[in-house]
Length: 349
Image 1 (spheres, rainbow, N blue to C red):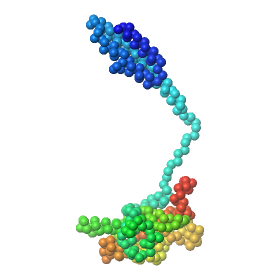
Image 2: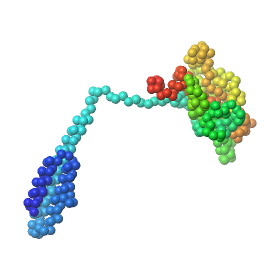
Image 3: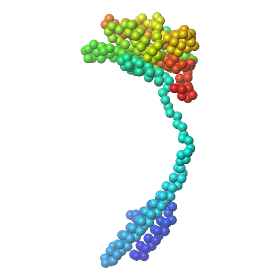
Image 4: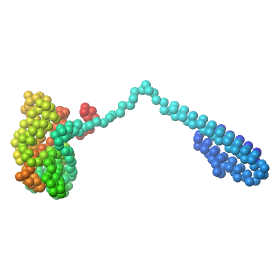
């Protein structure tokens, strides 16, 4: 038995010394000390040893195990240290080298303009709402007083999915949905309709050719106010406040008569050129004024069709082309620059 233990110990020591990696050490440990290992087999044969010799043999087995485990741990540490040294050599960092420049994303000029615009109207107590981009003809046209034979419904101007569903051509359908929701809420709670004061930004779609000022997909911001005793003067005051906060405190507005099916009376709004102060320049084409949006008092038929009594309530609406105000605010000549993802252009913002 003593010779057998000496043989196991010497053989294990040789194998441990020859090991070059941690996997080899683990194999030795399992082969010698494991459940089916050489030393374990010796312990199983202890029943054949005379009772008076068992303590002595047991001590020899324990000493052999301890010596092998100590050697395994010693060599394991050596191998681990060598691996760490090699890893450190391969991962040496030269702190004198310049760092790697990483490009950091930032807001798109459209997003900057939208956030500035939202900040103005939220400051005036408006709520920001959204609506579906894939819309029903009923909301996109019918509830906005646009009859079936209106030119705006022509397939040359509108992307139809089928006869009843289309890609919205404006964000105005959101105002119809909001008015319906407010009326429904008032009926369910058996109370008066709450005042409406919203802006609805979003993407719209029209069948336009791509050029410097047109795109088949662009963004609008719809505004709507409905309450008792709302007048055209409220509309003008709101737009004057918007122009001053968005384009500058010296900005003035001018309203010109126009026609929109869903407002009556209707107007187009110009702002005094914020670059030349109205003196005339390339941006305002020498006129001193720049057109920015359309607006008007909500048509009584639109109110009626949405369930609101036009004898009790009135309101105004306006629509702002987001790309248009972004182009003006940042003096960009070509709308296509906003969508070409040219980093040289976008980095300016």
